[in-house]
Image 1 (cartoon, helix red, strand yellow):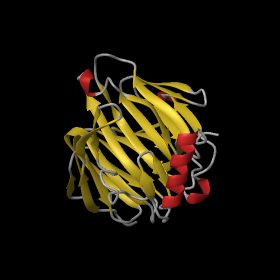
Image 2 (cartoon, one colour):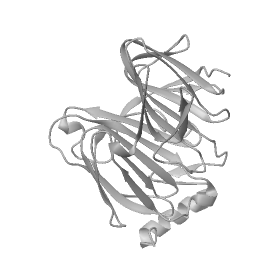
Image 3 (cartoon, helix red, strand yellow):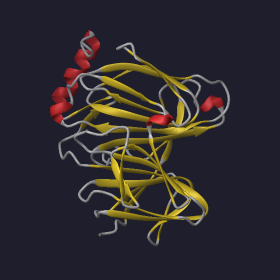
Length: 281
């Protein structure tokens, strides 16, 4: 097996989105900073309601998928399809914008901590104009794997732990995303296979961890070299690490705000469709 190593750290920058929600953005902070097929990764987390209370009022998307993982807190999703989903501790919302969706994500709490991640996952050209869709995944829908004092919460894809293959709640995507929340105990070690040829990254959001003998920075998208395995070691206080991997699409990406297509002409069409009310038709 070939161990993956740290190739490039992308430190998250503090910014805001929506109606003023404070976030840390690593992937997507600039159009050149992406990891095909992943377009953007935002970490949000605050116990100050002023940092999140304004939420994300109604807005459109086209051409990609969003994956929101709520570690702590309560947010309500509503969209033009009539979907309504409560995102609570440990839950995931997987939304396929496809040809077009208009939705909102609004906090359902006025105090306390809200913490989690939102990921933008690109769609290949052949799927950008597919019908919009939405899945509301509760914590019990996710695959939880306990191994030697560590825990793997598998959201999407498949992974083999101690010789047993496990399947996440979301599979069958053309980009074959592997998305998992890794919880390592104090000084714990965890080795996992990651498909060779897939782009991959790690994101430490609690504690400290190293990949082999390379320390990983916190709140940083640690882009990995190619290989078919990762070997992590946590510090004395343990670590929580997001693992993202996916098959690269290898197509041009043209983005204008909430629209992600392959050409400028397609972006202009998306804008015309939104302005004329045809985005979701």
